[in-house]
Image (cartoon, rainbow, N blue to C red; front, side):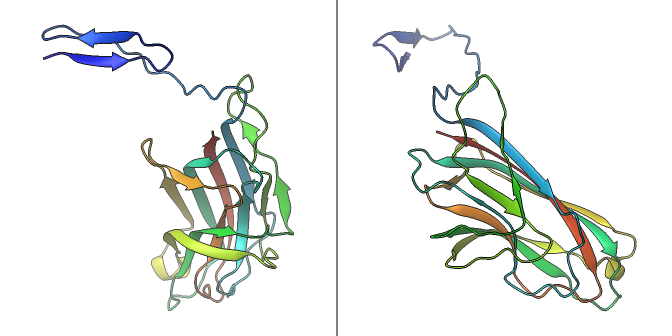
Length: 209
């Protein structure tokens, strides 16, 4: 049995026959003049208030509606640090990663994405990334698919835990995809616990092509 691997650039073929082999070396994607790999991070400068309302948008990143590319989210990582312990009877809160579209959230602190390889690719089309310890303004924003949910423990209810790290990983075959005009946000899904205050930081890793 023989297998033929056809070149994407020419009609050349690599033929692998029985009991013979070929060495294949993995390499980074070639993004060409457009696109590339990017990363951005942010953190709060003040605590998130106790009893934070449900559906509060804390962080948002929106991909440009006019882009000719797509954004492929490889990783979104959040770290939560307790500032004030909650009481033992509190119910844990829930945060979520959620897509949105139509408009761009405003307010808070704007963050600037960085190219992962300064010699490759172009300027990102993730043109707006921002965060706040309270609610970003979301006038005309339409929230769509919930990508993932995770708990924000009320630390007084579970003893000494004061730091929690949560990570969403995409896969090589099918990372999370943002179409032009779509965004991804960190958003409370329920009313957060009373008396429990916390801070957060995040990092988002993606590629554009």
